[in-house]
Length: 192
Ligand SMILES: [Fe+2]
Ligand SMILES: [Fe+2]
Image (cartoon, rainbow, N blue to C red; front, top):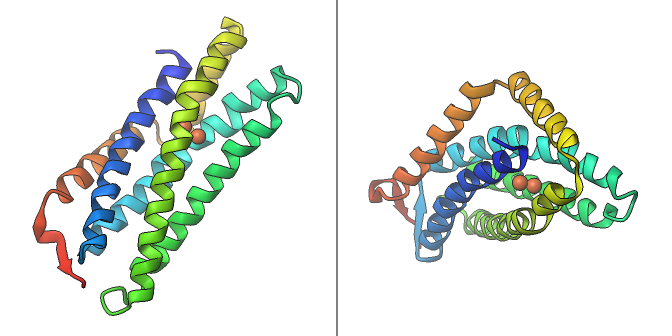
């Protein structure tokens, strides 16, 4: 598999989780709160897969090399992608703080949870769209095959460093569990 294809495939898994979070958002908007364990799994997925496994490869390997290639011409655009990664991390921190608080009793925490889920989904959807449709095609077009091969090798080293195939499989399991959980009405608490 090519390095760009690996990232596109990982985006599919991230979008699966965004879909589950989107369902959770609709429930909250309509007076029902998914259980704490749903959010704990979503937070774990975001830390382990989106940040450690995926964003790191983009920020420090692929887009770094692309920026060098374009000699400063893409600095703003790549800076924006990094900024979006940071904003997503901030949303997850806020989501974590809200679900660890007394959210069942506290409407302000529920509002914090809702606004950060909405922001997280929205920023990450646009971010993935831009990567899939602008940046990854640019990598394919601008980088010679040997550089793409070099990136692929770096990806593999980096993945091994953070748990390799086991890490990928456990994150896939989390994504599937989240999708199944949000279909189960027993995880919902009345929160009007
Ligand atoms: Fe990204
Ligand atoms: Fe990405």
